[in-house]
Image 1 (tube, rainbow, N blue to C red):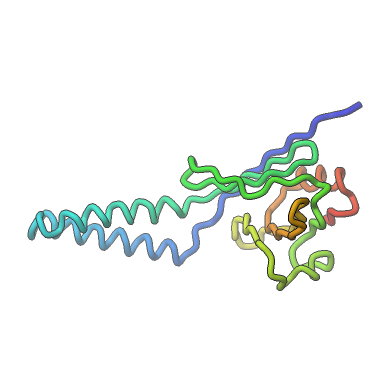
Image 2 (cartoon, rainbow, N blue to C red; image 1 turned 120 degrees about the vertical axis):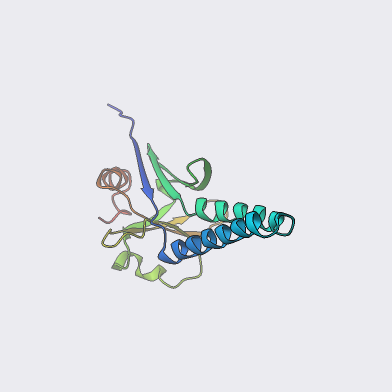
Length: 169
């Protein structure tokens, strides 16, 4: 009996400390320009205030990044979501195109460490959260792509069931 497999998982990327510092600095500069706009000269500080508001908005909003992993019957799709509304498909692959999936820095993926290849970093960067490396070979161009991701146990089991020789848990 054939059974459809559908697994969806979302990962929220942690905002780096440096980005938080930049955001605070931009907010402080925007407040400074706004005070000067109100107190000193509205004609002189009008355009810089508008520019600072726009820059601050986009700088703080672009730090909100999530990744969706969707696995459906041997097809894995990874989508990047910015500001909770802008979706960008990063990867769409079948399990037959996967070369290896294993915990990062383990023996199955060691030959790929340091190689010059397209890399997608789709992990949360949280302390202590294990992540996996997946190597995918594009069928048309034969080039290899490295994907760093954090699959859940259910997703790993479904991938292992589809390709037991390629997935190392």
